[in-house]
Image (cartoon, rainbow, N blue to C red; front, top):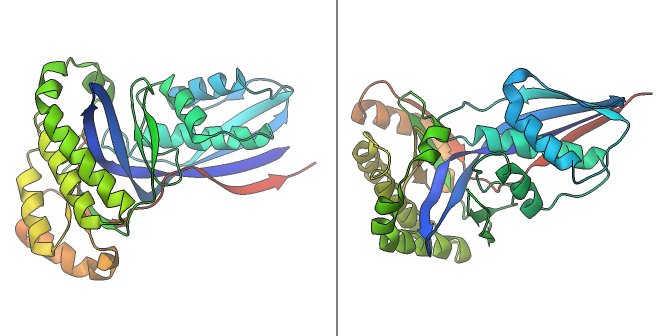
Length: 296
């Protein structure tokens, strides 16, 4: 019997989401909050997963159609979950963690492009399979572009509650609005790309802010102006949002974690009630194996 565990960072929504040359795509904002999956392989066949992990099951079935792992039953456990329907990339993080475990058990590697393609066969997917930031066509995978490591950033993650049905959101016909926003999307992505390539958090923050403003044309963001006002007070770089979720993020210098009490106090005085907030670091994406245990 072999047990292996892997973790994948969740996200505070996206640093960019829009259309480029008519193709919908995004750059996720990975943070230091993780989904953790453990798989135990025993002699036998098949998959054993909790009923609520149907998307992870489908991804593992797709993986097993590509890689041979015969003679083993895989028992999947969710050790740590991300909140659903908010913009933490919970489903993608679960899937990528499980695929990392399965690849190890199969004695093979799974490049980010292939892992993302498997995830895309299940549902629209976040761009967190790469060890850094990446641009991904989150619906069909026509664009998969590694951008580089994120510049040093903290993010104050805010949520006023509620959830968004991402499947319903992704099924909407948003083409007319997206076409009207295309020039703004090009500008936003150009700034995000400059921020990554030049290690410039200010440029990245400006791009994320443009993308956040544009996203409000597709899904109402009732607290967005408050978040921009708070960002200005805190000396932040900009605001990111979960384009199909409820999260807002204030992008701050990397040392902001040491100011958390001050930031929470300012937020309490300035924001409408009902919010929850927590400081995180922006991290590189990519699932990582955490442990391996073998027993006879």
